[in-house]
Image 1 (tube, helix red, strand yellow):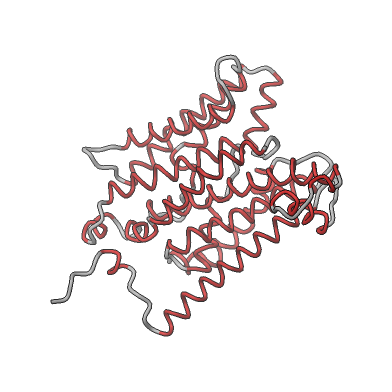
Image 2: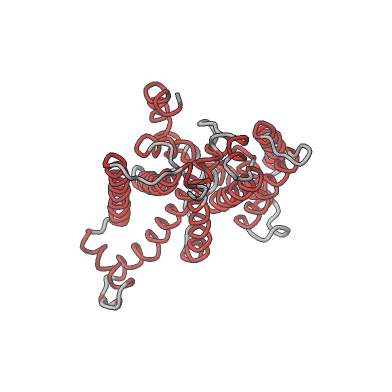
Length: 360
């Protein structure tokens, strides 16, 4: 007697045909190319800046610190400080933020079945902005900007989720509307804090809202990497369930997946990733909206490939934006401005030429 196929096997059959095998290998090849592009962007970003360093000098610093074969004492002290203490932790934080926003955007778009959804849809950006503003305006009450931003970002999403519950269910449209409502409330609170803040505090709030990696440090890297890595692996393991959720709740139940439990798991993790990214760098627009679209252009709708592709593209994009932000002018430009300037033309092109191909 033939055994009954699992939901995963019914949705994602084995690639037995030659065409399927070539398709899988093509996707893997694209992922490898993206990894190489990420490494190249890291090396170029390390070398470029107000204090230019040759690629040979950059490699020497990395080899000295990351392998047992180098001698840190033989390095040029200025190059060592610029590359290892300033630029490298900043690049790693940019990677963390880019990966977090891109993967979260891909998850939200699959769960909500809407290509216009971004990671900030549930009010996390407004909640985090309020938390950061509270810490800036009342520094004696709130312990840190990052911690308070993460706390209130999580509170905003929790409030949106609680508001959307209807008789034990969480309809997608209700959840989105709840996020809009909660986001508007916290935006009003931020406006109040701007109104009562001193000139110095107001300036700090505005710069935080524009996004940037000015204060990135190795402490941020050591805390971020394990949190983000575990979260990404968890969401990637849910890739086939995200494929099912994108088909609708009724289809998910027919395939043996509890949509409420699956949505709660992936939305919670994606939201925490977004809140953490916002607490690190402020509000950076478009990343979580653009990168999943770009990934689907190359890999199709399968989230098992869309999630890692979005992560790599988001990391590359924010490295490029950050490099431009600190090199194009004598004074550093907020990364959020660069990301918006570069992202808007791409979204216009995508809307006019590729929208029907991906979601039509």
